[in-house]
View (cartoon, helix red, strand yellow):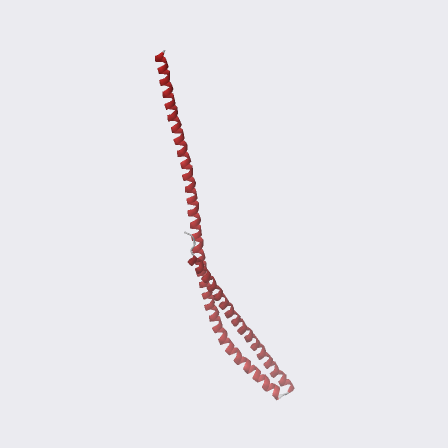
Length: 173
């Protein structure tokens, strides 16, 4: 039986689900990468704050020292917040990856089902074609056998008549 429209629609739906899931995974990965980059920048900001503290210690500028302390404190707090958000983003990436793999498996199962149906159809078509050829060949052989049997009977009949004619001629003579 040919692949039904329902199976074709199913595979199309599975492809769309996989695409949506892939995009969600890419989005989650991009968010995690963005948070990692922000964490890196917060570390850089903390180092700049400590450098400003060291510079103010040499120059004696109280304003620079306070700014450096505040920069380092804000950067440290930002890193703590970003670390928590990165952890939740990692969980989101993991869940999205699982979802993507699940939808991919479903799509591949549907493809396998369709491919198996097509292979079965092809085997059945080849089998029917071979059966038709066998039937045609068998009918040709049977027709030839009938023709040969008919010709043999005809020859016997013709031979029987010629014997009768010969016997009739002999009796007349």
